[in-house]
Image (cartoon, rainbow, N blue to C red; front, side, top):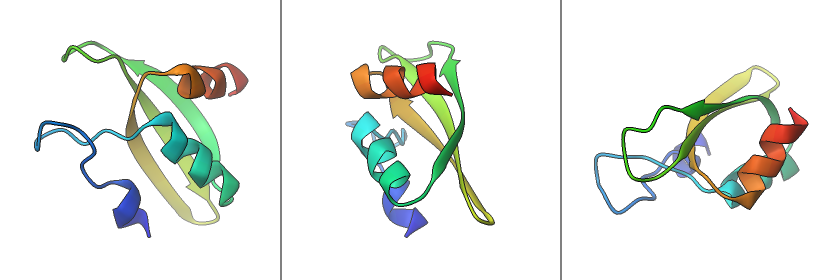
Length: 76
Protein backbone atom coordinates (compact mmCIF):
# COMPACT_ATOMS: atom_id res chain seq x y z
CA UNK A 1 0.00 0.00 0.00
CA UNK A 2 2.84 2.42 0.72
CA UNK A 3 3.97 2.14 -2.90
CA UNK A 4 0.73 3.76 -4.10
CA UNK A 5 1.33 6.85 -1.98
CA UNK A 6 4.91 7.30 -3.15
CA UNK A 7 4.23 7.04 -6.88
CA UNK A 8 5.29 9.99 -9.00
CA UNK A 9 2.51 12.60 -9.13
CA UNK A 10 4.29 15.46 -10.81
CA UNK A 11 5.06 16.54 -14.36
CA UNK A 12 8.75 15.70 -13.95
CA UNK A 13 9.59 11.99 -13.74
CA UNK A 14 12.50 12.68 -11.38
CA UNK A 15 10.33 14.37 -8.72
CA UNK A 16 7.89 12.55 -6.45
CA UNK A 17 5.29 14.86 -4.93
CA UNK A 18 1.97 14.11 -3.28
CA UNK A 19 -0.91 16.51 -2.72
CA UNK A 20 -2.77 17.50 0.43
CA UNK A 21 -5.65 15.16 -0.40
CA UNK A 22 -3.25 12.19 -0.24
CA UNK A 23 -2.28 13.20 3.31
CA UNK A 24 -5.96 13.63 4.28
CA UNK A 25 -6.71 10.18 2.87
CA UNK A 26 -3.84 8.65 4.85
CA UNK A 27 -5.07 10.34 8.05
CA UNK A 28 -8.51 8.80 7.46
CA UNK A 29 -6.79 5.41 7.18
CA UNK A 30 -5.21 5.72 10.62
CA UNK A 31 -1.92 7.45 9.85
CA UNK A 32 -0.79 10.26 12.16
CA UNK A 33 1.19 13.28 10.99
CA UNK A 34 4.24 13.60 13.23
CA UNK A 35 5.91 16.54 11.51
CA UNK A 36 5.49 19.01 8.66
CA UNK A 37 8.47 21.11 7.60
CA UNK A 38 8.81 23.57 4.76
CA UNK A 39 11.39 22.47 2.20
CA UNK A 40 13.84 25.12 1.00
CA UNK A 41 12.88 26.11 -2.54
CA UNK A 42 14.73 24.11 -5.16
CA UNK A 43 11.89 24.16 -7.65
CA UNK A 44 9.15 26.60 -8.67
CA UNK A 45 6.69 24.80 -6.39
CA UNK A 46 6.58 25.25 -2.61
CA UNK A 47 6.94 21.87 -0.88
CA UNK A 48 6.49 20.43 2.59
CA UNK A 49 8.25 17.38 4.03
CA UNK A 50 5.59 15.39 5.90
CA UNK A 51 6.30 12.44 8.19
CA UNK A 52 3.43 10.05 8.93
CA UNK A 53 3.35 7.07 11.31
CA UNK A 54 0.94 4.19 11.85
CA UNK A 55 1.74 1.36 14.26
CA UNK A 56 5.27 0.25 13.25
CA UNK A 57 5.25 1.94 9.82
CA UNK A 58 6.59 5.36 8.96
CA UNK A 59 6.64 7.24 5.67
CA UNK A 60 8.07 10.55 4.49
CA UNK A 61 6.27 12.41 1.71
CA UNK A 62 7.06 15.54 -0.24
CA UNK A 63 3.75 17.38 -0.51
CA UNK A 64 2.89 20.27 -2.78
CA UNK A 65 1.78 23.40 -0.96
CA UNK A 66 -1.93 24.05 -0.72
CA UNK A 67 -4.68 24.92 1.75
CA UNK A 68 -5.03 21.35 3.06
CA UNK A 69 -1.36 20.87 3.92
CA UNK A 70 -1.10 24.34 5.45
CA UNK A 71 -4.07 23.52 7.71
CA UNK A 72 -2.51 20.18 8.69
CA UNK A 73 0.83 21.91 9.41
CA UNK A 74 -0.85 24.36 11.81
CA UNK A 75 -2.37 21.45 13.78
CA UNK A 76 0.88 19.50 14.28
